[in-house]
Structure formats: C-alpha cells, structure tokens
Image 1 (cartoon, rainbow, N blue to C red):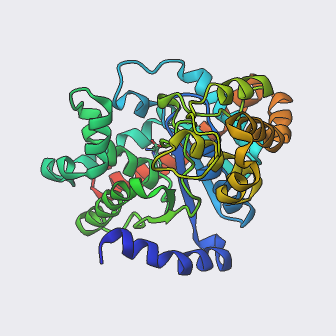
Image 2: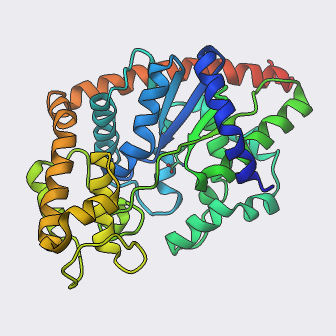
Amino acid sequence: MDSFTATTARMPALRMSIEEHPERYRVLTGERPTGRLHLGHYFGTIRERVRLQAAGVETFVILADYQVITDRESAGNVRENVYGAVLDYLAAGLDPRSTTIFTHSAVPALNQLLLPFLSLVTETELHRNPTVKAELAASRRALSGLLLTYPVHQAADILFCKGNLVPVGKDNLPHIEVARTIARRFNERYGTVFPEPAALITDAPELPGLDGRKMSKSYGNAIALGMTDDETAAVIAGARTDSTRTVTYDPENRPGVSGLLATAAIVLGRTPEDIAAEIGDAGSGALKKLTTDAVNDHLREHRARRAALTTADAAAVVREGNARARSIADATLDEVRAAMGMIY
Ligand code: TRP
C-alpha cells in the first residue's frame, strides 16, 4: 500500500476520533496569499476549517506570506491579499476568538525553527519531494533555495504550535510526510518536543475552474468569493464552451461545459449529469445563466457579511493572531533551545 492509500484508509477512524476527542487535536492549516480566495478554496478547505472549529478543535490558520516568493519574484499585493483572505474567513464563519489567524513573516521564532530543522533533512530528500518537483515545473523558473526547502518551512509552520492535524489536499501529502520525519528525527536526537502531525485529507471533490482545469487564480478560471454579482456574471459569460448545442457532462471532451456544470452542481448540491439533463438543448447560454444565478445565490449571504466588514477589522484580527502566534512560537523555540542545550 502506498502512503496515500494508507493515509486515506485511516481517515474514517481519524474523523471519528476528532469528533470524540476534539481536545486532543490542534489544527494548523493555511494558504499562500497570492490572490483573492475563490470557490475552490471555499469548498476545498474553508468549509472544513469552519467544521473543525464547530467541532471544538483549536485551529491555527497561517497566511504564508513568505511562501508567496517560493516561485515568483515579488510578493505582489500581499497585504491586500492577506486582508481579503481574512474577510473571507470571517464571512465564512471562522471566529478569531477561537481560531488564530496569523501571517508567517510576523512570527520570528517560527522562522528560526528552520535552522535546526534544515539540519535534519538531506539535500537528496529535498530534491525527491514530488510536491516541490510539481511546483518547480509549474513555476517555469530555476529552483530557488526557498522552493527547495518548502517542506521544511511548512514543517516549521506546523510544529511551532505543536499542530498534530493538518487538513490538506492530497497533492500536499509529501510535505506532511517531511514534517513527520523532521518531528521524529528532532525528538530522537534531542528528546521529545514535537508531535508527529497527521494529514486530514479533505473529502471535498476538487472543483474545476471555468475551463475545466483545477480552479486557480493563476489560470484565470476562478470565481472569487469577493466578486460582485456582475463580476461573477462577467467571468462566467466569458467562459469558453463549445459549439455543440446539447449540454452534456463530459469533462474529458467538453472541459468548458463540464466546468460550468461542476460549479453549478457543487453549489446546488446536485449532480452535474442531472443539471445537464435539465438544460439539454437550451444550450450553453442557459447553462451560464443557471450557473451564474446558482453561484450568486449561494454566495449572497457570504458576500453581505463580507461587505459589512472593513479592512480595519481584518487588520485587527491579524494583529491579535500574530501576537498570539508569537507567544506560542517563543515558548516552543525556548523548548527547542533547551532540548539542544542552547541556554545562556
Ligand atoms: N503550502 C500551502 C499552500 O500553498 C500553504 C501552507 C503554508 C500550509 N504552510 C502550511 C498548509 C502548513 C498547511 C500547513 O496552500
């Protein structure tokens, strides 16, 4: 059994254990603030975080701003992206009183874990990491030291707060494996400080974007949560369909039509085949109208809650989250230095 199959097989038991003993778990999860959060984030991860919070699991959400520059030259509008993401979290139901939302760059002690952690992995191991390889291929740039060490800083992100549960998509599993290895090797060498974090694989289906590829801001195929109704209508109107009139669900041969069907299906809680059958010969114009209305209806309350918040609200949440993350990171780094005999 490969590690993906093995991890997946453990999910039902893990989910049950989380429900029975939420107090045993601490979740660390997050994303790179590279742009506006979109429907793929919402169904893939944000809903899961809100569920974990409701189940009583203490949750940390990292906005990994330093990691924006793993595969690009500049961080772009990183502050705008951070605040925008926070507004979406709040609108989706994350409560900053129980969920700590913070930015990577604001927590020096977290980043300092990188030095001892780097000593625990070899260059060969880093080069072998399939996630790093995939990100390198997608970036079409030379491999930066920061990208090569991605799994190591991700391990620091998780372990600074002794996170033991990490909700990720399956493409991120090799990263979690590195975090487990680092925790184990540190504990073996210096005495037990860290838990070995488990991956929680989200069971949400991957949402295709408007062109049928994975929804991603960099593909320009995404519906941002914070768009207005009109912006949503405009991006859906611009989606490329095909000249076959009858609407059918066929992701392989009809990626555009199928991407729209999948989007409508997930927001309506129906199957794409069912929606295709309903539209039939009415064609892709009718499909676009149905999808636009479905998405806008689904996001109406989210967008209203988001619009009621200000950038100052987001900034205050990040400031408080950063203060809390800093005090936890300081305590962990003290333990690490003590375990290593570096007390002066
Ligand atoms: N690598 C994740 C992404 O690109 C973001 C991330 C950074 C993360 N640190 C993490 C996710 C720690 C889980 C745990 O989306």
